[in-house]
Length: 124
Image (cartoon, rainbow, N blue to C red; front, side, top):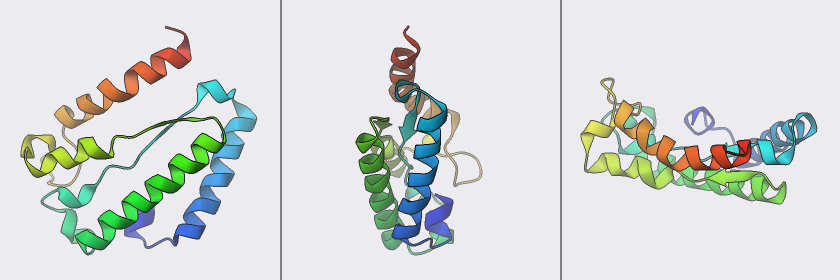
């Protein structure tokens, strides 16, 4: 998310991810790593404070595609939560009190999606 807000070019974002993911693979077994998509903060009441929502949302989707492709190429489990963040458009209870960050309810949705993958990686 911060890379989008700060206008980090996609090529730089991708190059940074290569370093991060490759270092994780060097340190951990592939089956012990999970990559999680970036949620779309532009749908929150404060989202437009961080740039044009249309551009920012498109950049988040492109960065998520980059992360997914790099993770899959390295046999790292990729979990998409992007769609869950979009629910905040219709349900403001999914947005925290600051009007930007996810609420506990939204985090719970993420856990429902991420949890089973992590438990599987842990052999539970």
